[in-house]
Length: 267
Image 1 (tube, rainbow, N blue to C red):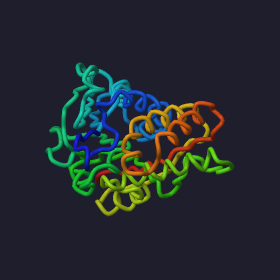
Image 2 (image 1 turned 180 degrees about the horizontal axis):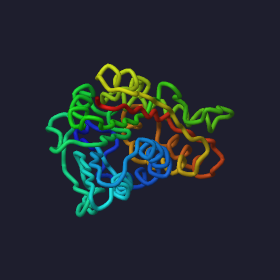
Image 3 (image 1 turned 120 degrees about the horizontal axis):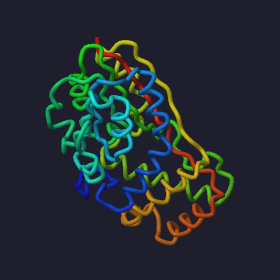
Image 4 (image 1 turned 120 degrees about the vertical axis):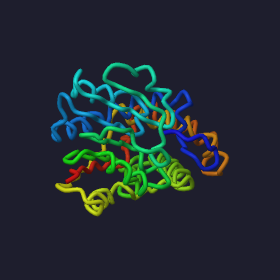
């Protein structure tokens, strides 16, 4: 999901060139988890799916494979820069704000959002609208990060390179929090789904360590936010250059924040 208010909006602007690199790394890291849950929920031919805050094309394309020619996938985001080329056939791409705009019409068998709500200021309203869009028996699958559960980029803080990496990650979290991100949101998902009246609520969590995609994601993220880290006094250009060089060696065991997946069924 994108937002272009530079003071208060989404920190990782989809308009920047690094966004495509980040999307590719996130897909490599988390698509297997997402589609394991999608398949367990029984998403199949003829069903209708709403992908909220789609960002990149990989999840809408995977959903389209599952629902087939008789199904439908609505992929929405504030910024559709990276998904507009997949519009057509089973997939419809719409510019849409999940908090401000009514849900797409028609009712859905699956509503899914990954790494979206943690960035949304009015998360409760977004959740209400997504549940409203479900058909009776439809499934909601929410997947969001929880940096508070595991805040370190290098869980094995064994030397100066790892300590620098973790200090820069702390700066990243500070920038996120200043823009309204809830860094402990992921852990609340099971409770929120139950309180919203969904049934059969379950959840799990996943975070990779020492994946090449973690290094790609970290380098792209730091390049995307480096001017803000420097402007806020959270790091110097020299420290950022040293960190990027450390990442490029491939010798840092880099992790992500845990991604918590929670799902439930509308009665």
